[in-house]
Length: 352
Ligand code: SAH
Image (cartoon, rainbow, N blue to C red):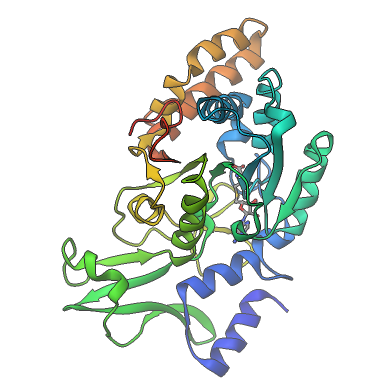
């Protein structure tokens, strides 16, 4: 049995499914789901993320979160949370960089929000010295001031896609044609959640609606408004338009409907939807990752680290710095949105 066969049988019985249903099944099906069955990172995997490229990424995030915590009077205890921590590399770098911040480690209750049992085990290994705890959802985080980071988490959440038809919308679905999964469109209907998109779209345009991302951000916003900050880092734009569903296998793009469960599926994040959902927390200006890291001092840090390096190690280090910050690489594609209490300063590196 494969997930393709499982989905085909389900669609044959009950009809086409939404793109969101397809995404969440392909990524998190307990037996066949992409994240349930593998560790996808690194050169041998399907994709590489910023914390896996260089320790500098997590170190600077750590200093940013710790400074924001100091700016708000060092409340303790507090939750230090990460959503979708992958191999645990980012949290390990955050913790190493903040060792010297008085009270930060003592006050921190480290909580990881992770769905994949395989990655949970990997995180437990990486973070064995710090006794983190795990929850399945943001709703289960402790009721404490909250400093949180999410890197490439929101892009993995399931979106629904709608194609404009007059003043209504047709939902994009996944159905079957000759036993093969294929995209289709549902009948036209109103879609109140997309009323504001009637202003900036025309007939035939496709827009994406990420309800789980909005619900999670609303929960984070309600907590952060009472004390804390959140850094949301991902690819996307202030108001996304068009089909951004993409699949990666072995670092190459593939058809998102091909062999579900064996490729990573993501969409671009609509940061406007997140900023709006975060009220009563304030949100910062959406900032390119390269600009954010430069403001936090990545060039100084890169030079310090380079001092001890030679040859291939030095070249790899220079390439990693460039990859994280250069506008033609990740520097511009990836963006940072900060959430913070309206009466506190924004996290360092970000502007109101
Ligand atoms: N932040 C890490 C990993 C990004 S990959 C890094 O930068 O390297 C996405 C992560 O989110 C994985 O750990 C995946 O298992 C997790 N994930 C995906 N969907 C999730 C969900 N609905 N709930 C919790 N975790 C999820």
